[in-house]
Picture 1 (tube, rainbow, N blue to C red):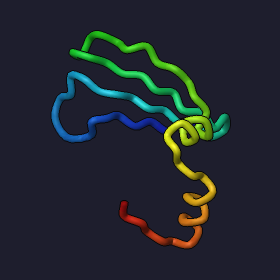
Picture 2 (spheres, helix red, strand yellow):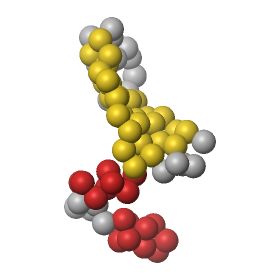
Picture 3 (cartoon, one colour):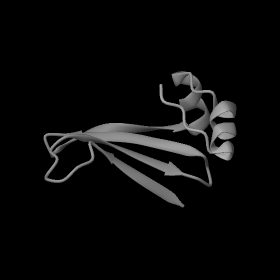
Picture 4 (tube, helix red, strand yellow):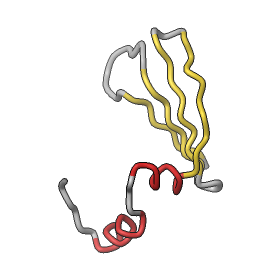
Length: 74
């Protein structure tokens, strides 16, 4: 199952943006983009774990928080 996110989100016609697809069965993100509504920006795949590691996101902490229903604002 693949889920897709378009950024920026919002109403109206977007001429530039980023597209992120997540494939749960492979635990992979595919990130690409577009500019001026006609120029595609070549995308790439990265595992979700590697993506989080490169950004310094602690997956163990995030998974624990999601099970305890705590919300941290930072």
